[in-house]
Length: 120
Image 1 (cartoon, rainbow, N blue to C red):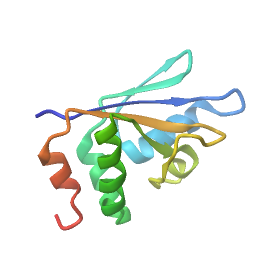
Image 2 (cartoon, rainbow, N blue to C red; image 1 turned 30 degrees about the vertical axis):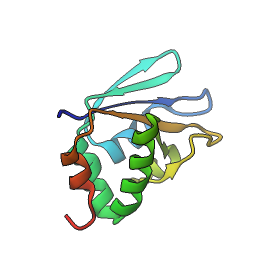
Image 3 (cartoon, rainbow, N blue to C red; image 1 turned 30 degrees about the horizontal axis):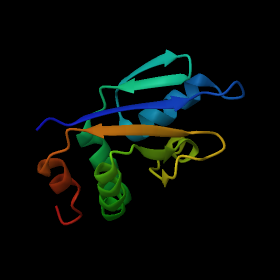
Image 4 (cartoon, rainbow, N blue to C red; image 1 turned 60 degrees about the vertical axis):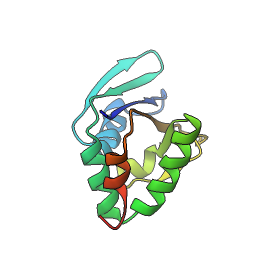
């Protein structure tokens, strides 16, 4: 099964759009980022790059739990925009004052969850 990750992130008037884009690229790698009325739309996210970043931070176990719960409910996952600017993945509840990077993961098969397993 093919995995698709799409996302969005708000850009507020007090923020520099280039810095918000840098936040996205820091944690998701090369992806397509387009401006829309609400902020930035993110497409073409490589799941492998995301998983690699999780492994580098040694948070695959946490990610597996957070993403697993979100997938069960059909909910998106949220990443802290400020932490992302520093290249860190930090999961949030989606209620950060400056907004979060919102990711919707679709078509997740056993392969992706297996790739996220910390023992792999």
